[in-house]
Image (tube, helix red, strand yellow):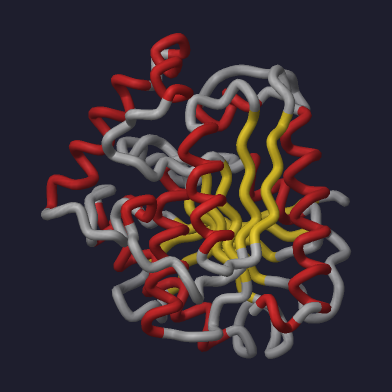
Length: 271
């Protein structure tokens, strides 16, 4: 499916106007799912109006994806980053009929790396403050553990990420204590959150904490679908690395997200 995009300002968000790049397939159907997408960047990057391969992959599955600039209003610091993202989520949940999608559109939150952390935090806060408003969460190699003690993350030095993530966590948590919304892997109550689609890869430094969070969600009774991509699928490109023009992981993400959409839409007990 060909993906188109446009830049727009979400000017009625409660926290203030938020810029977004909207991705959608050229021939998306009626009542398309809406995805709030949160970019990665180790809590340090704040680039806006750049291509987002993950957002494009989700749009190829038939969704309208709002890649929002949560960094400019928050300086990538907790809790402001979560507040901005949740404010946009609330706006999308309440305004679907008047803006993106329609009243039948399912609503998801998605994020990769640092954005995966914020997405998981949005899912937890949605459970606590807006029950049933969120239909699913898509966590792509989420950066969840500020202690960075897993075996796989110790290998991150090979691609220069461990030091960057150390600096990023220090920046993100500089606004206060380590609340469970800030580090979802430390949350003791995970039951009742929206079903999750989780991705990692065999050569992903965040492999262990990603699968560990998925296991804890399952144990809490949350519907989880997780996929481990093979090594060499181009996965480092979500960290700013280089891969081919069409990395294999993008096709995997699009295909499995399409299946996740179908599962959520036909199995209301997953909501």
